[in-house]
Image 1: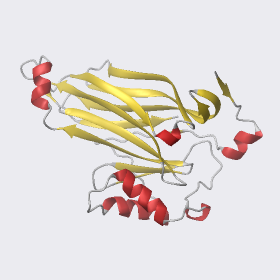
Image 2: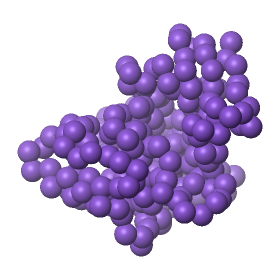
Image 3: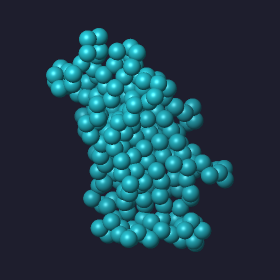
Length: 250
C-alpha cells in the first residue's frame, strides 16, 4: 500500500515544487531553446559532444559531475513563480537531445535504428505491394539527477512501421523501463501501459510506453509518495515513413 502525502504538507513544501511540463521532440519539429545554458550545463554539453574515446554517455556524465562540484549557484533556476516547470532542450552531436529543467532532474532522449532488421521485418510482416517498412526503431529517455549526475531510470519503446504514402501501421515489439539499483528506493511506477495506437486519420501511428512515475521512499513497492507525474514516451511515424520520438510529462 502506498500512502500519498498531500502537497500542502510542510515536508512536501520543503522538498518539492509542484511541476507541470510537456515537450514533444521530433525530427519534424525539435523544440530546442534559444536560451543560453548555464556554465555547468554548457560544460556537460561540451563533454558529451567531445566524446572521442567512445565512452558511454553514463560514464561521461558520471565523470563530469565527479570533476565539477554542483552548487545552487551554478544551477539554472526558474525565477518566476509558476506552476509550469521550465525546460531547455539542446541538440547533441550524436543526434540525441539533452533537456535541462529547473527542478532536480535532466534527461537525454533519442532513437536508434537496427539497420539490419528491415529485411527480417519484411519477412515477418506481410508487406503489401507498394508498401515499405522502417527498420526496427528504439526510442529512449534516460533520466539523471541534477545534483549528482546519477542515472535514475530509463524508458524504452521499440517497434517498426509499414507505410505506403497514404496510410501507416505500427508494429509494436516492446516497451519497458529500467530503474537503476540505487533508484529503486526512490522511484516507483504505477499503471504502466504499452502498445501501439493508430490515429483515425490513418496518417500517423504510435508505439508507446507510459505510466505514473512516483518519487518518494519505497521498499518492495511500498512506501510514501512525495511527487507523482504521468510519463509518456512514444515513437510516431507518418504515411511517408518519417518517424520521430515524442516525450510528454505532466
